[in-house]
Length: 114
Image (cartoon, rainbow, N blue to C red; front, top):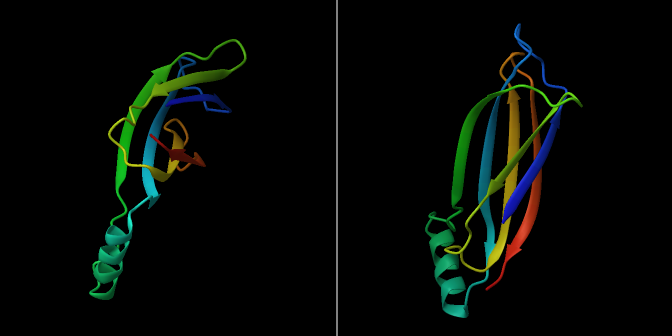
C-alpha cells in the first residue's frame, strides 16, 4: 500500500525550512475470523482479556525546504503482506515542530484481502 500526502501551512524556521514529525499508525479494527476464532475471542472478552487490537506505529522527524507552492510532499510504501484479512485504519499525524502544539491528523479505513 502507498500513502501520499501534501502538507500545507507549516511554519518555516529562520532559514525557511519546515521541521515536522510524521506519525503513521495502522490499527486493526476487525479481522475476518473463522467460527472457532470468534468463539475464542468471545471467551477472552468474558474473562476480561478482550480481543487484541494490534497497532503498528512509525514516527519520523523531517526537515525540508518547501516546494514553490509552500507545501511539502510525503509518500510511504507500507508492506501489508503479513497482515490477516480484515478491516484496518491508517492514521497520519503531522506535528509542526516550529510551532508548539500544532498538529493535524487524518484517518482512513481500508480492507486487506488476499
